Image 1 (tube, rainbow, N blue to C red):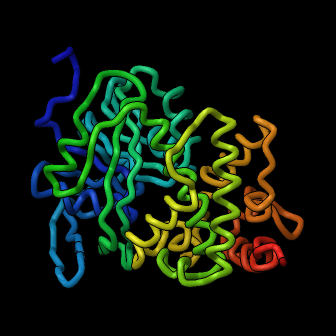
Image 2: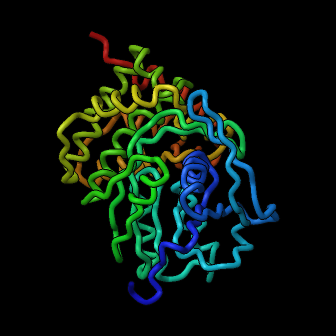
Image 3: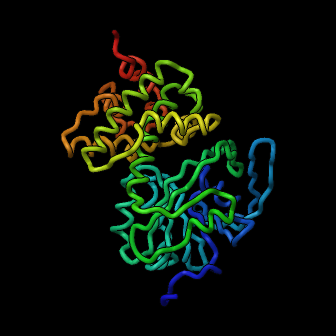
Amino acid sequence: MLPNEPEMSDPVYILGGGSIGLLLATRLAPVTDIVLIRRPGQHPPRCQLTLQEGELTRQIAVAQVGADALAEPARRLIVCTKAYDALAALRQLGARLPADASLLLMQNGMSSQEEILAAFPQAHIHAASSTEGAYRPAPNRVVHAGRGITRIGRLQGQEQDWAKLLCQGGLASETVEPIRWHLANKLRVNALINPLTVLHDCRNGELLEQPAARAAMQRLGEEADAVLAAAGYRFADSAFDQACAVAARTADNISSMLQDARAGRRLELDAITGYLLQLAERHGVAAPTHRALYQRSGFSFRQSSRHPKRLAIALTSAGKEAIAPASS
């Protein structure tokens, strides 16, 4: 082991108590010490989490601490915040985050990872692309709504066996290279499913039951494939086929973007659709359907994401006519 390299006996800290953070906390707590890092403020030293999988419900107690009250260095840290919060949340840990910590980034999109790499050049950083379906109906309750797989790969620093840990917790996981290909693959799936679940206010699987939604998915998929091909990414199947397979496998799941829209929170449009549009502009590829979802009614999603309720209205008003199938 290298000097200061995280040991397997070190606790695993989970930054962010959303659906994926709670899913990981409840699945990993039986196999390793877990500490859930909450927002700054006073928190009881332990909390009772509820994991629901089908008809089975389990109670799991885990340690928790506010981000401003962390007493020990977080040497092994899984970052489960929203993409737009990730860098600021890490910086908030200050000296409690060692320069050479081992980080696993669980964010959607492909923008926040690059920011974190630049900000923490000595850290051992891995990124994950996960198709696990989960939603949080209450602050300490998570529903595991669809089984998937988490693919993990190194971005910088020493290799760490995060996949083995997730497998020990009963979550299918594997180490892959290059991880950026898998992040791009998930990006195109997220770009098809997430905004449309907000537009139609529906679960993932319901998109497949609505002809207008399926047609919109196909058009979005064709554009996403063209943009990513121009950026050097090649895939064996189409974005549309991949998104349909994920939507079917996680049919009962409420997408993270729809969860945020319903709760009046900021959406991750910049990290997903916004990043895809940046690539489109950089490589000179048209993506009008994605742009219709990102910008409508005189203001962009970048602006309106600060006002989620207005954003949901914008999606609805943009929606059916902006991304309706072309008339024959």
